[in-house]
Amino acid sequence: MKFKLLIFNCLLLFGITASAQMEAASDTIYKLDLPKNAENFSKGLENKYNENFEASIKYFEEALKFNKEDDASMYELSELYQLQNRNTEAFSMIEQAAKLQPKNKWYQIRLAQFYLQNSDYQAFIDIYDKLMADDPNNLEYLENYIDVLLRIGEYEKVIEKLDVMEEMIGKNEMITLQKAEIYKNVGNYSKMMKEMEKLIEIAPSNTRYIAMLAELYRQNGKDNEAYKLYLKIKELEPDNKYINVSLYDYYQSKGELDKAFYEFVSAIKNTNLDYETKVQIYELWSEQIEKSDDGYKIPRAVDVGNAFIETYPDKNIGYYIMGVACSNMKDYKQAQTYFKQSFEKDKSNFATLYQLCLVDMNLNDYQESLEHTQTAISLYPEQPLFYMFNGLSYYNLKDYENTIKSLEKGRKLSANKELTRDFDIYIGDTYNLLDNRKKSYEAYDRVLKSDPENIYVLNNYAYYLSLDNQELERALEMSAKTIKADPKNATYLDTYAWVLYKMNRFQEAKKWMEKVFKYEKNPNGVNYEHLGDILFKLGDTKGALQNWKKAKKAGEASEFIDNKIKDEILYE
Image 1 (cartoon, rainbow, N blue to C red):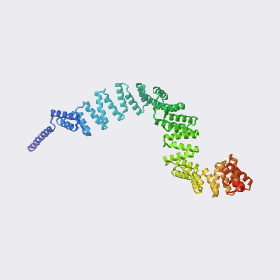
Image 2: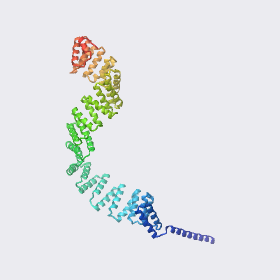
Image 3: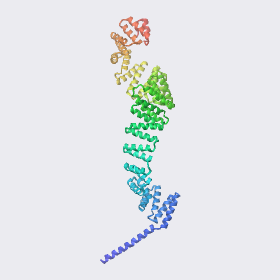
Image 4: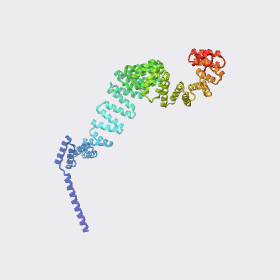
C-alpha cells in the first residue's frame, strides 16, 4: 500500500510540474503585453491606411500574440483576410470578435454579411432582430432586413416591415412601389391597386404610375376606371408614347373600331413611340383587318400607309402597305410604283419582291418581271417561287429554252407538293412548244400521279396525244373526265370532239363540236377549223369551207387554213 501511495504521489507531482511547464510555455507565446499589443495594432492601422496590406496583416496577427482577446485586431484581420479571399479565416476572426463584444454593432453587422454570403439567412435575421431591437428607427437596418426577407420569399413579413418604414418616413414612392410589386407577386391585386392609387396621390402628375394603374384596372375588369386614367394621361401628356396604343387596345376591346383606328394612326404619327413597336402593332392590326369583310379595309390601309410614309419616308413599310392596298383595288400599275419605291428603301425585303413579281405578272409586264425575278433569285437563290415567276416571264416572252431552265431548277428546290405540281404543268406545256412531246408527257404523268383529277392537264394531255395519234383510247378517257367535271366548257368539248375525230368517229365528233358553239359565245379559229375538218370527213364540203373561212377570220387557225380554203380540200 505504501508503495502504491508513493507512486501516486510521484505521478501527482509530475502532473503538477508538467502543467506548470505547459502554462509557462503558453505564457511565453501569448503573454499579455498591452503596450506591445497597442504598438502592433497602431502599426497595423498605419500600414492598412497606406494600403500595405501584407504588412498590416502581420502587425495585427502580432498584436493578437500579446492580447488573445484583442477584438479590434480580429475585426481588422477579418476585413484584410477577405480582401485576399481568405474567407474562412475572415469569417473566423469576425465570429470571435462578435463573441467577445456581442454589443458591438459593427461586429454584428459584419458577421451578418458573412451569413448573407453563405446564404444562412436565418442567422442574418437573428442578428438583425437584435440590432433593430436596440435601434428600432435605423432605416439602414430595416432596408437590409427587408432585402433578406425578399430573398427568402417572406412577403408578409416584408409588408410588415415596409409598413413600419412608411410610419417612420411617411408616404414614399419607393416603398409604395415595393409593396405593389409584392402584392403582384402573391396575386393580391386588390391590395396592389390600393398601393398604386396611393402612389398616384403621392405623384399625381406621374403618367407612368397612372398608366400602370390603368393597366391594372384593365386586367381586373375595371375598364371604365382605366379609360378615365387614359384620358387623364392624354390631358397631362398629349405626346405620351404609349397612350395611343393603350387607347387603341381599349377601343378595340369595346368594338369602337373607328375610335380605335384613329388612335392607331395617331400612334404611327407619334414620334415619341419607337418604330419597332409601331411595326408590331401594324402586324397585329393587319391580321385583324384581314378577317374583316367591311368596306373600310382598303381605305383604312391607305390611311395607314400614308401615315407611315409621312412619318418614315425613308422606311419601306409605308410604300409596301400602299402597294398592297392598290393591288387589292386591282390598280396594278400604281401598286407596281409603290412596290418599286418600297424595294428602293429596302433592297432585300422578300415580301416586297414577291408582291412586285405578282404585280408584274398581273400587268403582263414580263420584261419588268424578268428583271425583278432575276434580282430576287440573286438574293434568294433557294426560293423556288422566284424561279416560277422567272420561268413564266421567259415563257410569255417566248424564250422557251430559258423557261425550261428556270422551271426545272425551281422544281428541284420545291418541297411543296402543290408547287411541284404547278412546275410540272408549266414544264409539260413548255416542252410541247419545244416539240419535245416525250418530255412533255413525262411532266404531265408526274402531275397525274399526284393529282389524277387535274382537269387542265387531262385536257392538254388528251389533246396532244390526239395530235400525235397516240394512245387515243386513253386520250378519250382523259378528255371524258374533263367534260364530266365541267360539261359546258368549250375548250374541253373541243378536245373531246377532236379525239373522236382522230379515232374516225366523225358523226360523234360533229355532235360534240356543235356543243362547243352552243356554249361558247365567242368561238376561236381553232373551233371553226375543227368543225370544218369534221364536216369535210362527213362529205359536207360546203359546210367545211364556210367554217374554214370563219376560222381564218377569227384567227388562231392552223398553217393549212389558206390551202384548205383555196383548194377546198382537207390538209393535215
